Image (cartoon, rainbow, N blue to C red; front, top):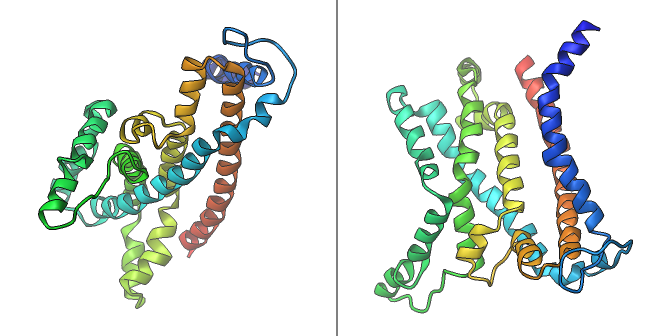
Length: 283
């Protein structure tokens, strides 16, 4: 009993925080989603599914989010994994700290400033101007899905690198040596030993990046120029400009539901890979 009380005291601050900052706001948004928009905006109590029936009106925002968020996560993974692998396995210890600092340097400045920097890089006086010099004309990069994809990968890449780096840094190098001694090629060793053992880092990095991208609104607003927008941009419009809180709540709850389903399926897939990793560690 004393242990239960002690655990309750230790968990109480976090439990209260989650209740006030997460559960209660979600309950309020859920209730609002069944209401109606007032004559001057805001929320009028009601019990209707009209807001959910109007969800197709924001299909473009959902489509962009459901396409670019997974693509951004995958692109960040493909870039981050080789970098994390080099830092954890191949890099000299005397250079490792310096390179890790360089990875995190972009976080020292605001995401707003970094996004505006990409406006110049992808704008008419940036990469398109360089392409014109070599004879490739009329290339438009800014205000396109490509620009948004570049922005989100650049913005969230460190969140993918560090979990993978930590996972690979804890890798028992003797397993790699044993695999090599048994005649495995470097590619086979990576596929059968390194990759399965780095699954926790990959899972954490992908989860962090994907969840944040699903709610992203700043990068699409800046690099998309109002032509490529996410659900986050739709929510900003509905709550702050249109003041249609009921419809905005329905859109938000739908996004939360999609994320829950996606994360659940993803975690089941990762748990299967984790089982394979355990089998390898027991060998």
